Amino acid sequence: MKIRLLATADVHGVISPYQYSDRTLAQQGLARLAGHIHRLHDENTLLIDNGDVLEGCPLTFYHAQYEPDTRHPMADALNYLKYDYYNLGNHDFNYGYDMQHGYMEAVNAKCITGNITEHGKVVGAEYTIHEFDETHRIALIGVTTQHIPVWEHPEHIEHNTFENVFDYVKRTVAKIKETESVNGIVVVYHGGFEKDLETGVNTEAQTGENLGYKMCAEIDGIDVMITGHQHRSLATKCFDKVVTQTAYIGKELAVVEWNLDTHEITAELLKADQPIDENLMALFADKEERVQTWLDKPLGIVKDGDLLIDDL
Image (cartoon, rainbow, N blue to C red; front, side, top):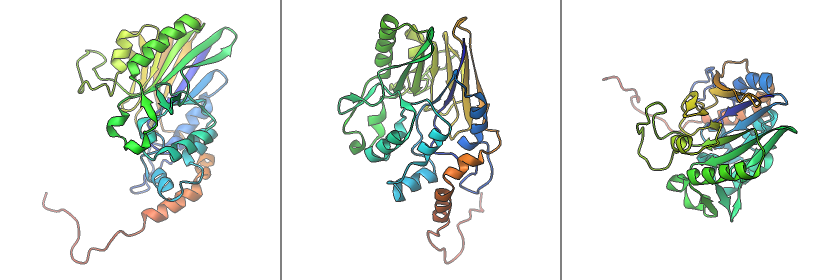
């Protein structure tokens, strides 16, 4: 059986392909990835979001500041595109529990985040078994960088615990291999790589924020690792694992093609170059109009001269 995984990451609330700075059209946003998703998403395909959807653009900021009690536009977008699973990202904690819970309750997809608890309960699932038919099943493990407490306001995470990603994945992969009958294991990791994938040379301070390389090197049993957080464009292998990562604000869609019988796996990135999905745009058109009106409000007046820099 051939299956397919489609993945977005670090969309940061960008649905529209029009840039907020000058309203020019760009290759970005879910509305321009939608064409790929509609074409590829069938019964043997899983559509996964790998976190950071609630923060990062004027639309989501406006929603959080002025209309927090209304349905989140990103929930509408994920439901319209029929996402199957989602992981939480570090920025999905930025607006506090009410915003995060409202989004999670409104999204039809299943949360798979396993290494984060709230009030002692896993926010998503320890792991998830997705069954395509009686003999073709894969396991999904969702994890998010445990570095969140370094950045986040304490009141936004006071009820959460964050387990080390490497420890969690190693233990959970071992449990799946011992107790489940699956054709493969996918790690959906809102985190990235701490070393160069080819040379193994450190590319950043080894703080534990990103542990993708360590997991690929030291944990047997992972077949595919969908990463994020660093906004890099990756569709390659790290050791014997197929790994992906997409650029931010909906510029790319990761596509993994997987033959569960022969175990052939390939990966590629598709650009946000499709015609605009006007039906998706219509879901938040009224809110977007209010956002644009808010953005156009003057902040002040320069009485004398201007703010141009002309001595460079």
